[in-house]
Image 1: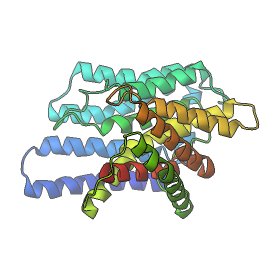
Image 2 (image 1 turned 135 degrees about the vertical axis):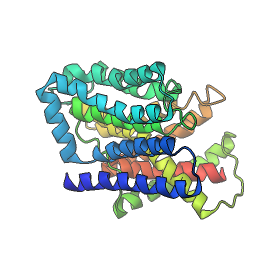
Image 3 (image 1 turned 180 degrees about the vertical axis):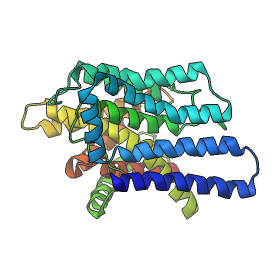
Image 4 (image 1 turned 45 degrees about the vertical axis):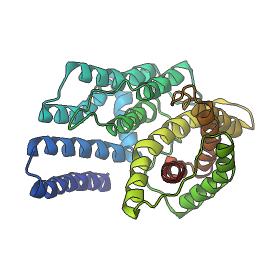
Amino acid sequence: MRRLAAAIGLLVLLAALAETLVLVRVRYFPVELGALLLSFTLVLGAFAALTDDGFVRALRARAAASSATALSLPLLLLLPYLILALGTGTFSCYGAGKLIAYIYAPVLLLFPDRQRAAPRAGWRDFAAMLALAFPVGAHWLHGIWMWPEDLYFFRPLYSVLIGGYAFMVIRNLEGVGYKLTFGWRDTAEAVMHFAGFAVIAVPLGMALGFLHPHTASPSPWSVGFQFFGIYLTVAIPEEMLFRGILQNFLVKTFRSERRELYGLLIASVIFGAAHLHHAPAPNWRYMILAAIAGVFYGNTYRRRGRVSASALTHTLVDTIWRFWF
């Protein structure tokens, strides 16, 4: 817990330093920029805090002991929004209302089971997963974080925070494996599964007319920036939902000796189906490749038990695709 507090404090200091460095060159919007950086820092702090098992256990104990506490703790997620919205003059009751609804929909769905273990999934669990994922994919969360423009990255980050609280704290779901860092074994598994997927996906994607190889010479800075952005705002949120929550829950639900295989395959098919809405919809080519990718992501997660490992495979796929296909 002390290391976690130190890490969050360091994030705040880095935000202050970043603002100072920017304002040395650009002396405009100091209040607005400060509000954005502080808001983002608080979100990243909570994003990192949920990786700490001791922190999650402490939240779980408080939520189990008091209904009022369990329902009031999510209100803390409004603080970063209020700092940004009030500091930039972009507050709207409509935006705040959408955020509150998004925060509480999965929490309220899982609330009746807050004092029970989570041995298998029920209808409320699947409804909560849908409430977590659908608003992001359907673009219902537009118009909330609005300075200097409609900011995308807050949406997936909030999906992790809300999903982490709803499932790991309220629902007592074990084995999620929500981590942000990865070791050399995680890296080895991620790279191996990336290579295995590439062997299948490249010729299949070209045959389907989905992949179009092209040459590109991006700078290392551009590749690194995209890699980091994809890891935090695409791979971690999607792997948290589809592997850490859905696949994990499915494996717990099946009673067959092949439950790990069934959980992996079903989660992969659902992951593929979640890509149907991409243009031109229904994008069945994207669905096929995403479902196959899900098998490799899911197996990375199965072997390592960490969201960060499957997220690394996911990030490698998306980064290579973005620059060279």
